Image (tube, rainbow over all chains, first blue to last red; front, side, top):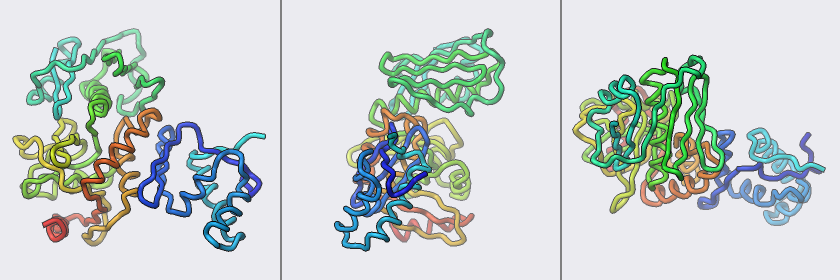
Length: 93
Length: 262
């Protein structure tokens, strides 16, 4: 189950491409494609398999000067979407 | 042996006469001067009888090699070795064989710097509009509604870099109108959306990029080719505008296009 303590990483084979302020995320094996806006792109760039979602939200809260509880909810929501599309996986251990 | 040439990409088909004759007949006007990469079509009675049409098979990639497998079919496309071969049960149909050739063409075209895209290519005022979208998006409907205008193809097109911009080439993998028109300069990429009113909707380059990748057959399933596919479409989008075209089932959508593009 995905929580703020979860650590996630891009799924194997996922390819990303910057386009303007947005980020195109492609999962060829799953045939899935997603466009992330500036905020979503920032979340994805922090996803590294080591940083818990809570810490990602904390960093972005400072970057965007937004309330941490709202950013946590946004990060969790986006991570759930990415997980469902097979674009990220939970890090073991 | 017979050849199939689309927009300068050539394949040389090899196989038994009773398999090649219907393909030759269907592609009679697509014979190129260059023999191109060999594509072997090999009957194999040891394979199980086909359980369904071959087009239901999805490509699988490993180390750059594409495998297209289904009961009754074993296709391998190894571009690095310049080889493509399909072993198929003798009950395979011309449509099955065509699907394999189309898959080889998608990969060979990409290898040579071009792109196949699921789209209807309609020539209007001497330039081509690519109305793209997956099955059911309305490509054939839009082509049918474009009465009197050349249709390069209503399902699959080849895009090739030109000076300047890109050009759209006809393919034999769908329906055409005015087959004497085989290519035209690309004016715009329009993602079809069926709607109650005709309208052009601006979309971000990232959204267009994602949608075009989704409409790039075969190649978009390969993890190894995906970065280059994204890069190539991004190059196209630097020169060619992309919009969503909301259209109702009437040819009035051309008024919207004319009002915007002239």
